[in-house]
Image 1 (cartoon, rainbow, N blue to C red):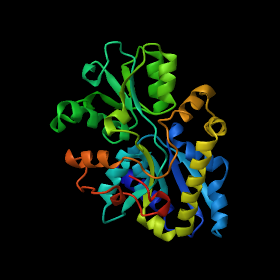
Image 2: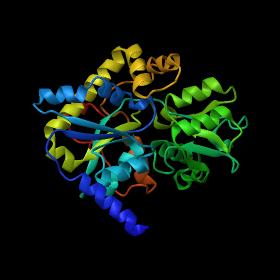
Image 3: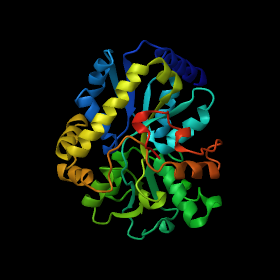
Length: 330
């Protein structure tokens, strides 16, 4: 099995051998936090900005679940741009520092993430017991897993940051949401993202918010980001610039056209989410469509403090590429 896995990774790496300008392979996950990519895809903004750079860009899209799978795909050479939480970015930045040098490209906006439970006995994270299971995208790796650890550390101290890890279970957002809405399964909690958390609250009267990521992080924060290797950025400067410009245009569109953004999300994801829920999310004053990262350093320094990463970031610029488009980040 090890030989087969090695052969598969080698084949993926060969598939990702350096190529000429004009190709970009993007991996996203589930939920409206990837809306800017949906807009860029439907409106062909990457291709548009590529032409302005004098490059015909071929864009390839793929959808995976969980930061661990995303990071494996990036390091194997199967994708060029990874979409995941700040937690997975920090993990791979730390792991590749001085080698592949993976760093952030841009944020995908700021959204509050809710830990929702359908267990009537659970009002706070202190109420979870060994009988509960909390679904999240990737155990100990996803941004939801890291924010939960941060909340635990705030309540019980850094030495106990992993106290609830044993209750977490890797589960794609759609599956975890279905479990919370239906009830009657071992999954009694879901640390998700929009629109899944809003669907849970709307469709199960027992569902309630146990934790809000903004409260843990001290305000609005960019939880979902895009990142790439230094090699891709250096070898494809025009394609990279076109991609960042496309994101900026998509962010502007989303901020000014919530109705159009909702329609694009429904079409590109073939989603059956209630359009009214999407509009409520997009018009929520806590939701901000901007590609400059916001309030990410607190989580980064927490991860270093508890030993989750070895390299201590002094500034958000340590783990993001220097780019004027995200110059006002944090």
